Every structure is written in structure tokens, then in C-alpha cells.
Length: 68
Image (cartoon, rainbow, N blue to C red):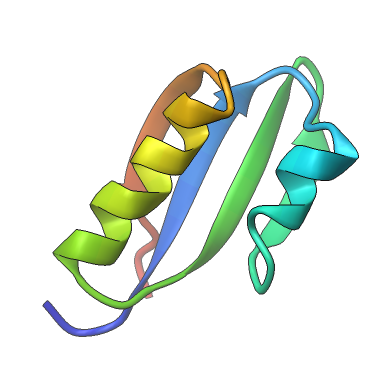
């Protein structure tokens, strides 16, 4: 898997602590959700981001690659 841009749509707003966990990714609030998007290096990186979201107690609504 080559580097690919992904969009992670999550419920609610992110705290400053949660935002700092996703350095290098764009965070856009679209109430009542937040979109986190950025480059994902490989499948392991993708799973790591999902685990990080879960560890922070953030509800993931959807995850998908951004066409491009």
C-alpha cells in the first residue's frame, strides 16, 4: 500500500489533547462531527490511527480513502 490520503469522520469536537495526537493531519469541524484527514503511509499506520482514536474515546463514524 503506497501513501494514500484518508478521511476519518468522528462524532463531536476534539479536545486540544486529542488534536495534538494527530499532528500533520488536517482537522475540520463540521458540526456535529469532525473530519480528520491526512496521508496514511501503510495499512499498519491506518490501523494505528484507528486504535489511537479508540484509545482517546473518540467515536469513529467512517474511514475512507480520499479519491485523488
